[in-house]
Amino acid sequence: MKRLADGIILGEKMANRLAADIGDRILIELQTLTGQENAEIVTLAAISSDRDFLNSQVAYMNRAYLNQLVGNGKRDCTEVNLYFRDVNGIVGKTDALRMEMRKGFSTVPVGETREDVLIREKKGWVAPYYRVRSIFDLMKDVVRTSEIMNIISLGLSSLMLLLIMAGLFNTFSRIIFERKKEIGTLRAIGMKKREVKRLFLLEALFLTASGIGIGLIAYHLLSLGISLFSFTTDSPFALLLDGGRLNLRLSYTAVILAAASLFIGAAAATSIPAARAAGLIPDQAMRSR
Image (cartoon, rainbow, N blue to C red):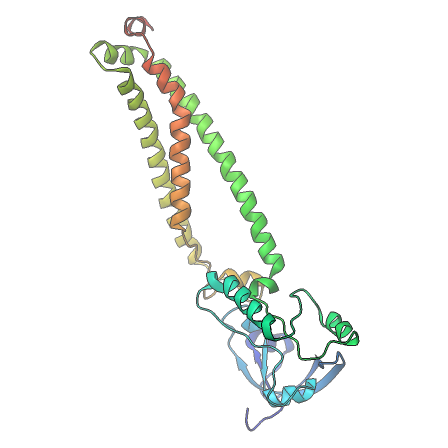
């Protein structure tokens, strides 16, 4: 880049889309800081491999030359990107940085466009002014879609829990009806009511635990199968990929909460049939067909 001041580096997919090779001259469009639309012919200096979706959407140039084209200072910049290893802490760090910037600098809201800023300048605002955004601010539609999907998932999970509870209630009601003689025999030889009730509750919890175990095994097999396929990285979906592959990560907190909900639901659903079983009169239960 030192030898080629007007050089530009493009991602592999962008270069293929333009049918451009190293050394070709490319016409680019850019906007100055005052909003003027300009065009410039630059030289393709290198082609970088696309590791992810973001890399395929950006280009690299000599900063001094680019600043000259957009009307910026030679060593100035209009945007500074900070990369964090842990995506979970981005929102909190962004909010903290935004609050600190407000103490000593002129800042503009996240959603304002360049046109909004130009209007502010006409009203007396003096540059420079700053805006702090996180990747989630730039991906509002994706975040909104994710939130909607979480709400839908929660609704479907609640519905599934109700269906499971209804299924357990009907199943154990039928089991108790068919095992009246067995229950009567157990009561006749001295088993107490609470022990009969506990017996059916433990049976329901065992079935629930077995279902959870089978579900976890199926999940791991499914995630292993999906991870064998590679996907394209030239779409927003690539943000969910790891090296072009979709790796499903299991949240142990979510598993624990789901398991606890299932155990509580199973206990609640079988409590009434279990109480009915415990309340059976031994001699009448033994005479039943």
